Length: 127
Image 1 (cartoon, rainbow, N blue to C red):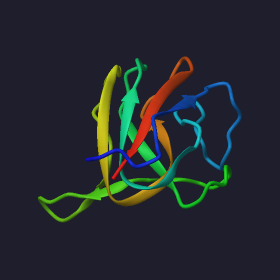
Image 2 (tube, one colour; image 1 turned 30 degrees about the vertical axis):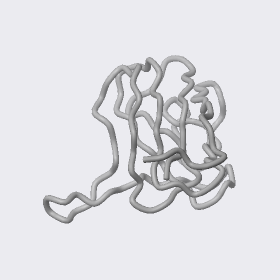
Image 3 (tube, rainbow, N blue to C red; image 1 turned 30 degrees about the horizontal axis):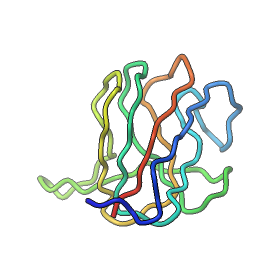
Image 4 (cartoon, rainbow, N blue to C red; image 1 turned 45 degrees about the horizontal axis):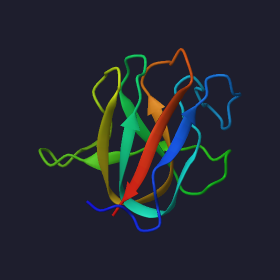
């Protein structure tokens, strides 16, 4: 796992006071759109202190704010099924890494429970 060239850490705000940006968005659980600057095969995420929740990624094909993102799935080796990539529920204060098994550039961070305050995550694309 190496950092993508010319791409550094960037902050990503989950602002619970904003209005929805796409159809069906839950603003208390969804971050602003992340643009890694290039397609990356993985992403490292710093999860700040949050209200206990699982964290997953919602991926977009383009940078249009109104584009509806979809859950990132991965292949499980045990039964060749796919499952949504998600952490276990927790209160944050940790770094995690997600191998994307392909390449993603645009995504949003999604928490499995409503947040009661704005949260700032940090992300880094990896190759």
